[in-house]
Image 1: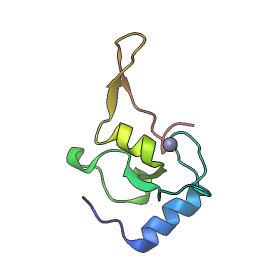
Image 2: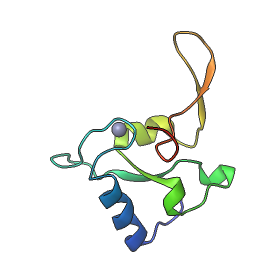
Image 3: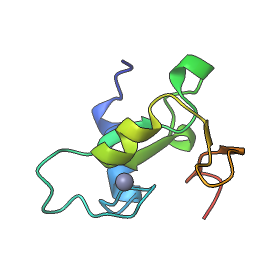
Length: 88
Ligand SMILES: [Zn+2]
């Protein structure tokens, strides 16, 4: 696991307005602390830098894991996972 410096962690949380950048749920009132996700995983040489980090709720973080692509259940097509740094 890659350690994210506290100052960078605070920046990511503030930029996301305390919301998961994948599903939009607010961290306020949640029991579990949201994760700092590497949009491009470190195993794929993703950097620990502002441009590659996103705030993710536990559910989204665990579902995404170190993947960048998934198979769409409806079509079986392999699609790229939403990238909150490049997509809206
Ligand atoms: Zn989420």
